[in-house]
Length: 242
Image (cartoon, rainbow, N blue to C red; front, side, top):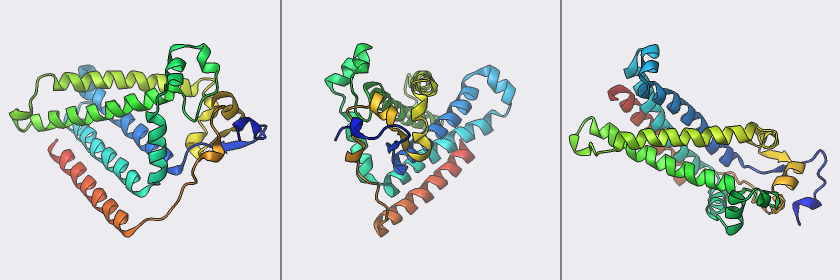
């Protein structure tokens, strides 16, 4: 059954699960805080305005630790079946997706749940996350042990920040545009207007999406508890000795 067979007027279709929305919200919130604090550390003029550089640095490091902790907690506590499905969808950058990225005419063709631009953004943001983690960790360790002071680490961290900021600005601009605005409600309740789905994701059938399941095994609950405690301890240590 295609999306076009759904009664579109006034109807909404489910697009994002609670697990997916939690990951997006955590990532967006943490990135915003770390970008703000990172800019204060990066730009001398902002350092002078905010004054207390050590406190800003402690916030930056603590949020980084809590960000990774929260992502791990959602991965453990959330619906892992849906996460695997979403990962497969993002990783399947097909020839049609590449055509979507190269040609404006191709963007009028029916797309799946995610179009080529959304897939590329997810892949690039994942790469940025890895680069932030590796370069940030090396910078922190390098302040304590010269063995970890590798050439270009600071430049890599700063360039990744600039590139990631550019992608985020573009992502937000598209989301707030007239075309993307109808999809914003999906971040709140997981649903989008059926008319929007028909026009922009005509090759996607909402009925094929798995239903989110709830329930937590003792093993996953224990793992989540360990991750939470470790994350809080790490954040406290980083804030105290950053």
